[in-house]
Image (cartoon, rainbow, N blue to C red; front, side, top):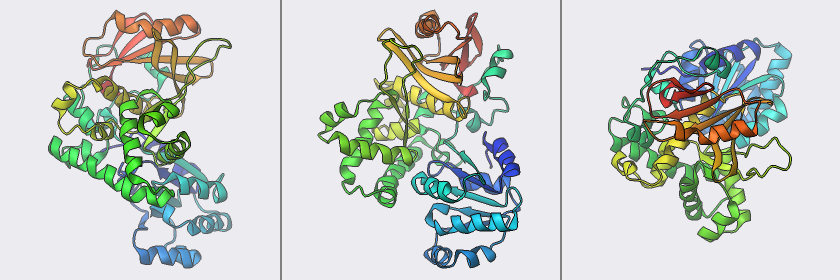
Length: 406
């Protein structure tokens, strides 16, 4: 069964605008299946065998002559020599839009090669793990803030694909999130452990000079505790006995490998005491659960970090849907005045978002949003996201949105 992805519409548009389109993102998010489904007439070339890679490196011109467009080159980062040849072919042949489709999961190499050779000729998209609406194949989901507030789906309901704790345990990577592939929680947990092992033992060696893989894995597990929280490298370094400079290097590797991302503090007023420390967010709540050692959803039920797991899940879903082309921040003025996420719809149109691990949100959950609106009176709307399955107004300008609608 093919699961429709939210970025497919934009992917098709980019393929009508540019001769080359690149889809990047974490490993195992379904890039190959997406491109093969959206472009069935493209020849698929998987750059995985040493023989094929050697051919592409030794004579990229002949390699592409034997594989004329429209062509889909999968795992393109393994053959940087092809980028310049693609540029030459595009410029000389005045290639049609969508002639070359590229995919890869190592942005270090991909973006360096793209910036050197294909600038202005390429459209780029990132495919992240599944959101709840993609798993359930919900026909309507929230992708545009202006549309959401002009015509909110008041009274509509959206459930999660699984009970909340199982949804957080599985996360959004297709092989773990879908019962079609991992029928049980145990199978999903095993696949997530294998994912971590593959990354630490293989991918890190491919993209960096890190040799102390044991300490790197320890750092990853520490990040699982901090995910969706503010992030202080010097503090973490003291806690695990490693230098800040080392952790800074590792953090860059993890970010460039789509294992984590950072959310900066929001501040548009000079002199205000607003937090500037970034939040760190692992790319998937299932990955976070695995790094924390959880193998069954019942472990999450009693975990003091279940709220952090839910926040990780929601922040990643926001990045994939509402915030795909927008800046995402968080806001904290003090311990009592904070919101989990601020989406910058435009520079002067911030949308505060509060995330609550509850199925019964109430007025007490709106404290942070109200404080933000007081600090930034130009704010038009706020959003609260929880486990409640119904969409409704909690205040005249604060909308409750079910997590299942992302």
